[in-house]
Every structure is written in C-alpha cells, then in structure tokens.
View 1 (tube, rainbow, N blue to C red):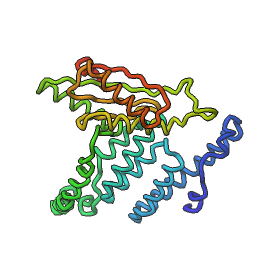
View 2 (cartoon, rainbow, N blue to C red; view 1 turned 135 degrees about the vertical axis):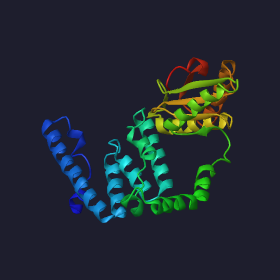
View 3 (cartoon, rainbow, N blue to C red; view 1 turned 90 degrees about the horizontal axis):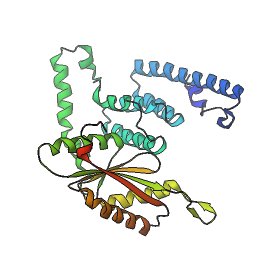
View 4 (cartoon, rainbow, N blue to C red; view 1 turned 30 degrees about the vertical axis):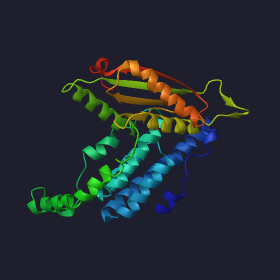
Amino acid sequence: MQKANEMYCGELLPGNQSDMWFFHKGNYYKELYVHTIQELETEYRKKRDYKNLLLLYSRAAAVYPFENWQAKLIQCNLEVYRYEEAVELYNSTMELYAREMGTPPASEMQECFEALELVEENHRKNINDLAGWRNMDQIFMGRKNDIKKAIFRDERKKGAYYCTYPSFVDYCRLVVRAKQRSTFYAVLMFLTLSMRGKKDGRRQIDLSGQMQILKEAVGSSLRIGDAYTRYGNRHFILMLTKTDMKSCSVIFQRIETAYYRSSGKGELWYYADMTQELDEFVL
C-alpha cells in the first residue's frame, strides 16, 4: 500500500483534462490514491507511527495543496507537540491561499488549534484520571519559556506587522473593540497593484516579484503599530491605527515612492474607510 501511495505523482496529464476519457481516468487514479492514504492512515495510527503519518500527510499536501490536507498535517504536528511546525505550516498555507485563491482555506484549519485533542496516553485512557491531567499540565508549564520565545522572537523588527489574513481579521476586530474603551482614529486601506498596459520591453512583468517588492514597500512605509496582509494575487489590506482619512493620501504616496524606488513597475491605487463605518460588519 505504501509503495502504491509513493508511486502517485498527481493528476494524469492535467493538460488533457478537457478530454472526458482523461478526466474519468484521472479521477479513478485519484480515488485510488486517496484510498491508499486512508488505509495507511489507519495502519499508522494503530501503531502510533507518527513519523510515517507526518510523511503521508506532507506528501498529500504537496500533491494536492488546495484540498485541505494541511489541516490533517497540522493536527498531526499538534498531537506530537510540534507546535512551532504547526504554526509555520498554518501561516504558509494561509499565505498560499491568499496568493493563489484570494480567500482563506476551509474552517478546519483554524479548528485544528481551537479543538486540539490531547493524545497523551494516560489522559486518553480515562478522562477522570487526575494524574493524566497533571502530567499534561506539567508538559505545558515545562514549555512556557519556549512558548514565550516563539511568540516574541520577531518583535524587534521595525515597520508594520505583516500577518496572514485570519490573523489580520482578529487584529482588526481587536482594534474595533479597543476603540470602545479609548477614542482614536483607525483606517482600513485597500491597496491594489495594477499591471494593465505595463510591459518591460518584450517580457511580461513578473507579478509575483512585483507583489514582493510592494509587500516590502508597505512594511517599511508604515509605523510599527500598523498591520497589513495580502489578499489575492494583486491586493493588500492595511489597518492604520491612530490615523485619519486626511493622512491616507500621504501614506499612500510614501508607499508608492518606496515601491518605485525598489524597481516597482506597476501602478498603485487605494481605497480607504474609517473603521467607524465598519463596526457593524464582520470583516
């Protein structure tokens, strides 16, 4: 079964999927591949073979990156206390979906963290076993220093804070709540990179490279208390705290200058809203 799983490399001749014969044949082999995953998954879990289970999910996520195999992989990492690996995978998956799809993946991704099942053997044998609970608590407390280091290790960086879309949504909601306790202005800015009519000689401009340049320009142009995220293949969303609408044009010009200074070749435009107008809506 493992040999069959490893032999599968993806869709059968994806360029010919418009041909119904290739389409049905491709689906047939894909179903066989998913079946091997399910069989191996059951076998590995019986043996508590997490090493091969991680490899199994990693391969599935590489073959089909948009079919939510990352959720299985994240859950498996959490089960063996590989929290940093789980968070890194979560962030990279969110970035992939934002870049390629323009939307976050299925809710199962977030649920991996919210509904984490503790798999320590003593704890699972008997939910009323206090010794099992204490053992889990000791593991948690023993890792508190590692947790603090993982949370704050990047906080010395300058410029705005870049985060994945779900984290950005949480941050914006926190800003809206904070405004109810103390009065300050906050603006949500929508930034777009347009490549229409822009060509570098005979070669089409590299959109991915231009978005990376723009990402760095945004990060260096905003203050350390601001946050931003990528949304789709040509858009960024910015949360600007203690900023009013009058300042948006100045901020945009600063971003635009930094972008063109770093070999930016596209055209930029923005739209902004005060957060007072957004309080009633779910971002």
